[in-house]
Length: 190
Image (cartoon, rainbow, N blue to C red):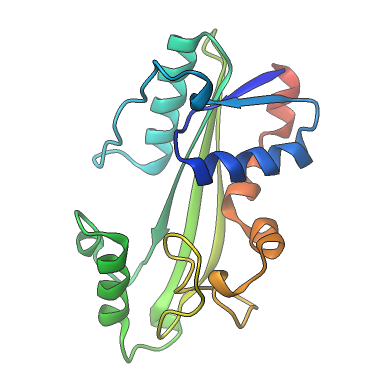
């Protein structure tokens, strides 16, 4: 089985490829780097992350005539308006989140990272799954060399931010892995 990771994000492609090596070792995994003339449709902020993942997987599968997998994720903060995220850089977003949650209890800093993965075959057979890692936002940034919100997110039952954890631990608890693991049975039907 050949799977195309419908992404041109180097880090995302690497992480998905590493997870698939473990959970779907017989799959031949390629990415959009192997199809330089194809461009994904833009992210639509009016859609959910699941709807965006599905739209991208459908577009790639139809255009490339291959089984395509697309993943979208988001940091969910029930106690904060998501308007603070729009249009700002990650550095500005992190600063805004920390300011908005300053002085709040751990319960009020509850957060989760959600990953939606869609897999679509060229004939339109589809499956969409979601994985979630629950935790809370730290009082300040901790850890370096991470991407996105890893430096402020602490998974429940851990005392460190994701940025402070080893790559193997981060991979094991990631919502992306949790979602991809739910696709194993679907992969077998392709």
